[in-house]
Image (cartoon, rainbow, N blue to C red; front, top):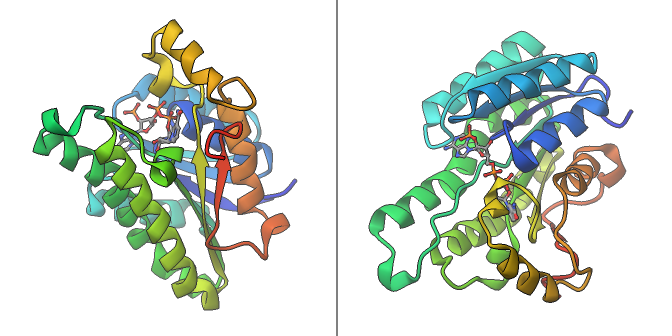
Length: 247
Ligand code: NAP
């Protein structure tokens, strides 16, 4: 087991990539705390699945946009599980529109969830990790944050912001033995891309050298690698998991 008795907090663990990360880290021996915003039933199912693997699970109905709620999640996790090792900033949303039609709300919702949300969870956890003199932070960015995507000015900006945050923080906390890395998925088969029409998906696949969408599991395996000792000399990096899309 790569993460025996480690403790991980994941934002947005009820569905998609966050769910797969929660289950995969539990497979590798970690106890898991995660939050979700709306999908209560699905969050409870993930909790049960984690527990069926013999690991502990805590779930929080809370909003990454709210710093006080993130502090509460970190404090309760520490209290119940006794330590903290891994933070995965996964919660994210889309509000895709051409810039000329994009409202201020579309901009602010995406920035405050995807970018400020990660800031809030890190801010809530960083002193604990610094005191422990160890830790791993993994931010889920996107190919959009590297290449920029049309109709996703808000989303691309939020994800590019996460890349900058990852690199700056990696330098800032390296001396505390805390590593900070990011993963940039391409198209991954979750609810987030579920709304795409079949002919649009076929068109998109033509642009992906490996000619298919990825799976949440394929992302989760790399999160596990980055959270484990196997990557102990890697920090400040952005690893693309995109079938070659960003080449
Ligand atoms: P998803 O299936 O839509 O799931 C999003 C998760 O985030 C859900 O668990 C959701 O909880 C949670 N969430 C959303 N807003 C939240 C908030 N304010 N506070 C707490 N939790 C919140 O998305 P996904 O495809 O798994 O994407 C996960 C991450 O990967 C996102 O950051 C996304 O930008 C990134 N990504 C995805 C793809 C892709 O192709 N799927 C590609 C590149 C990057 P509720 O359901 O309870 O609201």
